[in-house]
Image (tube, rainbow, N blue to C red):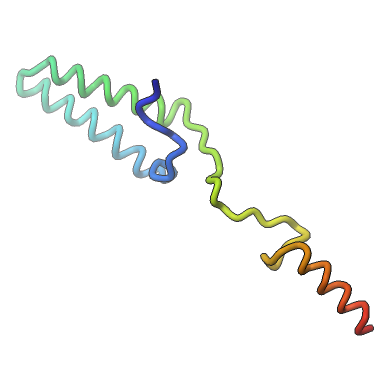
Length: 93
């Protein structure tokens, strides 16, 4: 079971991943300093897990909704429209 989905768009930015790990370890430090080692271990474990998932094994995949522009479709419209434009340009010549 995976608790953190590294492909979620929220984790794309480096500062977000750093902040999550830093907050977990900072909270673990607070718990240890105030004398509650149980919650310190829990927070430290969450930080270690976040570090592992968000940095060690992090391999972002491109989002499915991202537009893919191929070299033959540089203007962003449909490739069929590109063929029609080329045919019209040949007729005009």
